[in-house]
Image 1 (spheres, rainbow, N blue to C red):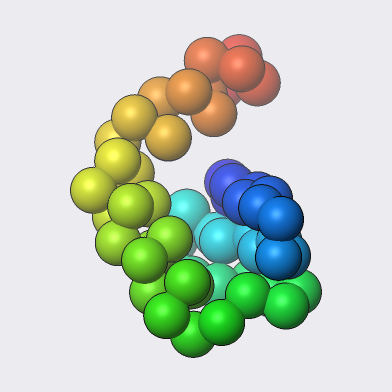
Image 2: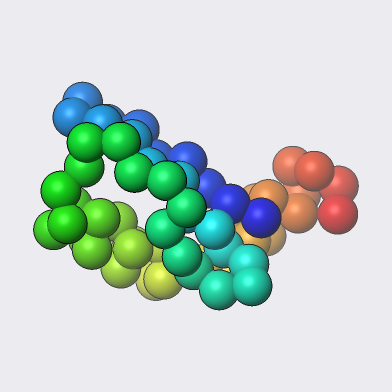
Length: 57
């Protein structure tokens, strides 16, 4: 389970399972990644539920 983040300056991929972890970063700064990670942590249940619904898990 993972999530992709795209923005003007770059993109990233974070694993949601088994724990939230940066999988890939392309041009995003450490502070941007930290902000993204905080958003993912705050909404992790919503993201996991959306993943399961989308992929019929």
